[in-house]
Image 1 (spheres, helix red, strand yellow):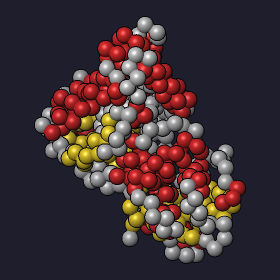
Image 2 (image 1 turned 90 degrees about the horizontal axis):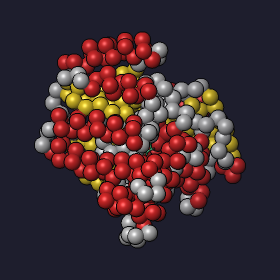
Image 3 (image 1 turned 90 degrees about the vertical axis):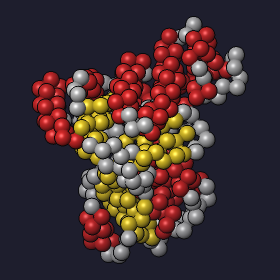
Image 4 (image 1 turned 180 degrees about the horizontal axis):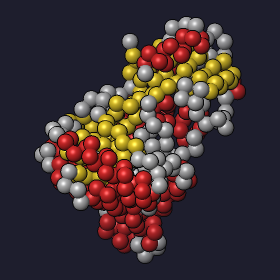
Length: 382
Ligand code: GLA
């Protein structure tokens, strides 16, 4: 991959590039908790976005996306969200740099990668992190990783219009081989938790359903959670997010006002608790207990938070009573993308084949499987 992106770059721009790799991410448990100031448990994976870049002498941004075989050129002074979509994850970063007065000149870039698009593995965050990391190096902007993560999140808000939390960028940037990151999204303190479960593989099953509803529904869920917090605040002004809320508060302050908002908020409060207990399971190497919590998370996401879809539910149900599968659930924002499964190594091949066959038959869609490993976060490739 690295050599491919370099080759394309040199052919196109006739100069040696800087190359940055920024990975996609998984999340073991803790979904939709990041924008509620809760905890998440993500990790960077062995699928990544690669960006090759060099400075220019003028003020032009000249981009090429190898995946789409498309070019895009714009003057820095004229950048705005583009209908072409993929350039937005790069332009959004430049826009944020301008806002904090990190003025850069033009640059050339080629983007390539093997993070499947629209599969819930955060290819967009990976492009943003790769871009900000590369520009930080090229133009010696002196940004630290945390600043870059926040900038990438702001870019997504402004240029993609989705009010995402911080998890995806954080995982891509701070990932560490064989570790998951227990991130407190309120304080932004984090801890690496070793994740090496002997004999167990992390298997992602891609529904191949693109999440078209995802961005509008995502923003709606965020508002529903904020509404719940507002109602609690009437009696408990100290509560600033669902992280600070209890089920009892929800029962007294939210349930009487709106059942739907109550369901959403209850899921979040339970999910934050579940994650903390899952971390204890991990410390004890208790995969069965962890796996059960993953199924519980799925059920909450499907029935209470309502961000699943029939294909995701089908895939989770297909493995629910399989003794070789410890846990499974939908992963990421929802409405499509992948399920994450913890599967006994010797059973992976048959499982993928069997589930693939019934999925194709019942849902009339192909199933794609990825066996992923946990790798380091964003870095320059020498
Ligand atoms: C998307 C968002 C994240 C997070 C997840 C759900 O991936 O980008 O910030 O909210 O959905 O956990």
